[in-house]
Image (cartoon, rainbow, N blue to C red; front, side):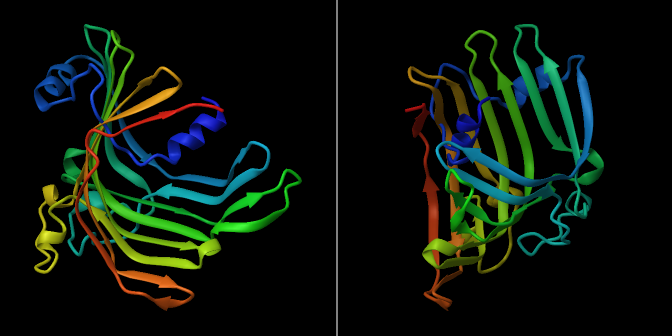
Length: 268
């Protein structure tokens, strides 16, 4: 995949519709994972000093770290061993199978001993715009970090239609970002399932309240790479928004739905 397409994919908020492929359900999953295949117990931490995309000028993202969140509680709840991974992304079992019809399935879930959730943490340093000479005068972000927990990831590549169906369930319990060129800072933001705001005052959450359902179909469109949205639903809470170093209050978005949306990415 070329760098222009990769960066475009990173910029898209996951949303999904319909593309002649059925979403994965537990019955279909059981039929596939009951077959012979490969299982991988994952323990990983990814570091990158810089990721740079160059067109005329460049955008550079510094000091990227992907691993565990190294916390005991998420959404003010201790979820057990799966969320106690330190700075490693672990407690995850990957099952890889090729079904009789030629479909490739990749399923990631917490290992049985780790409960029903695993934690994750992502952080970066500055995001900088650069001239073709490599000189940078604009810092888009000085820092970005977020932590959370995830319940599953399912990927199916359909042999007959060449459509990738991606499903995931996850919640972000703490997002902090400094948007330098606008003078905006966001602290302690939450992006979770649609049961989060309704239960926020009593702090009594089930997994279904916190996991955002994300269901995407990805395939070759008429112009380029097409993203159709089957399901994306979330509650968003921005409790602290600073502009010029002073708080301007908070923002709550309840029951956001982007179901049925569609995006196509192509060169120009």
